[in-house]
Amino acid sequence: MVHKAFLLLAGILAGFALIVLPILLVPTPGTLLALLALIITVIGVIAVVVFSLVLILKALKAIFSKCKH
Image 1 (cartoon, rainbow, N blue to C red):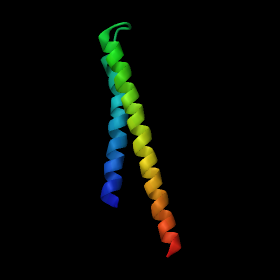
Image 2: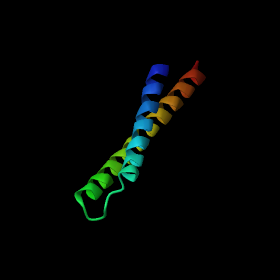
Image 3: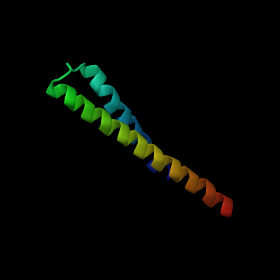
Image 4: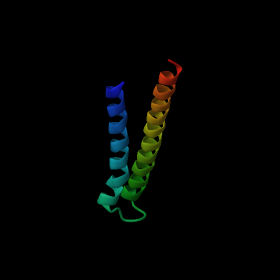
């Protein structure tokens, strides 16, 4: 269980890296690089949200499964 949590945290960190990457590229508006930067940012945001939700749900499941016993 702990190993899966670290994998989910790594996924969240990778999502944040995708969000920051277009800032480092400094694309010129109206170019193909600007479109690519927007796509990378959207993918990063989706990754952070999905991995965070999965991590929260797994934590809640672990908490409530311990309460039943």
